[in-house]
Image (tube, rainbow, N blue to C red):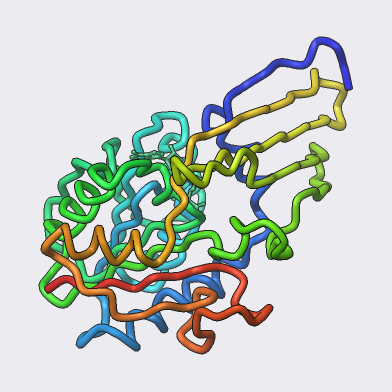
Length: 266
Ligand SMILES: C[S@@+](CC[C@H](N)C(=O)[O-])C[C@H]1O[C@@H](n2cnc3c(N)ncnc32)[C@H](O)[C@@H]1O
């Protein structure tokens, strides 16, 4: 690693974030989002919003399938990156720079979702209730809100973690080594710090980049989620799943490797 490497915060370097976490199958996950919606909603979705959309991969897939797609994120660099990918793919994703707790859409949509633990940026009940209320205001009655979270077992000592912690990916221009861990779990504050280290070594000799970031995330467990759904006055919890598919219920089985909560706006 070159000594001239530059340090950057995670979401200020969207492409490296994206390459480091680019192992997900976005087409399959978009299928899963639509399958969950079909399971819990009365009508087929024609429009969707992603909270904390980041690069907006799922939105581009949904837009390509004909849905009107909105993305909300408060980070300008991330939105510029998402915009460039949408332009590259020739799909219409409408990106709004806004906070998930206060955003407003120009229309009510059928489906809302917040993936990859991004809902954990809501560190207090008050933040989470505000996010649920702004989401409800952007959803039709009967609309679905899907939240993808860490499996609860990953926060408890002695239970084997379901998520891998170190990996390396090789791309034509850059090799990315990533470390991810649920660090500094605080059972009193109900918070954890996703410790993320990304080392990017460019093949053309450019200065390497090292990203070391520690975010403050809330540990969302089932009781807390039930509490905020009730406090919002807007949502019923209608489903708990162990992956982004209706086929896998939330459980302690290995196939249930995350926690997906499905809420319906009343
Ligand atoms: C881990 S990335 C996830 C991106 C995307 N959901 C995915 O699955 O790839 C989290 C994103 O949340 C955004 N973010 C964090 N706090 C936010 C907030 N309060 N309102 C809107 N966006 C937020 C960050 O800018 C970042 O792009």
